[in-house]
Length: 313
Image (cartoon, rainbow, N blue to C red):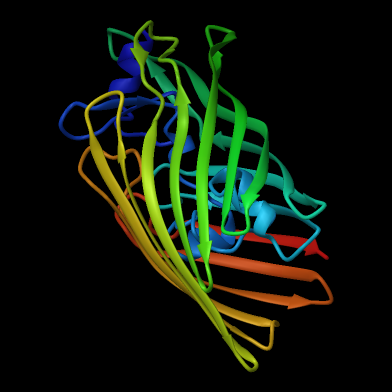
C-alpha cells in the first residue's frame, strides 16, 4: 500500500526516501543540504568559511576560530515551492569558551505538503504528511594555532503522519567530523558528514543516510571598509551508489553592515543534493543581523527562499 503512494512522488526531497535517476536511493535526504540563509546564498558552501550560529550544520571545527563569543540564530526556509513544497525552521547557536574550545547546538524541523495514499485499485484512501526532524550538539577544539578539530552527534527522525490513522517512522543517530586548517587568510577543510548506519523506512527497505566526505578551501580578507570571502567545497556521497556534489560561493561585506552573496551548487545525477544557483544579502547592526537567500536556478530547488535573524557578540 505504502509503496504505491511513493510511486506517485518520485524524488521527493524531505520524505523518508528519495529515488534519484540511475536507481540510487537515500534515506533522509533533507540532511544533504544546509538551508541556513548565509550558506545557502553562497551555493551551499559551509566548510572553510567563517562560522556563524549555524556552524553545527556543516562547519563543526570552525567555532574555535570564531571572532564571536556567542552567536545565535533562527531561520525559516520555504523549500522547493515550485516542485515539492515544504516548510523548514532552524534554531542554532555557537559559543566560544576560552581561547580554544567551541560548543554548538542545532535543531531543524521540516514539514512537507500532504500527499494522497493510493491503493492497488487506484483509489485515494487518505493522506500522509512528511515530517522530518534533526537535533544535535557538537564541540570543537583548537589543537594548534593553525588547526582545529570538531565533532557533532545528531538525531534525525522522519514521520509520515496520517498513514492508517498512525504515523510511519524512521530514526537515526549519526555523526559529523571535521579537521580545519587556517593559514593567514586561507582556510582548508576536510569533513565527513551524516556518518551512520542504514535506516529502515516504513516501506521495510533499508537505505543509507546521505553520508559524504568533502574537502574545501576558503579565503577571507579585509581592505579598509571592504571585506571579501570566498569558498569552494567538493565531495562524494557514499554508502549507496556514489554521487558527486560541489559548490562555490562568495560574499562581499561593506563596513561590516551590508553583505551581498552569490554561489552555485552542483549535484550529479544520483546526488541527494540537486544543483542550484543562489543569491542573497544580509544586514548587521550592533550585533543584530538579518540574512536572506533566494535560489534562482535549478529544477528541483528553484525559488527556494531562506530568511533568518540572529545576534552575536
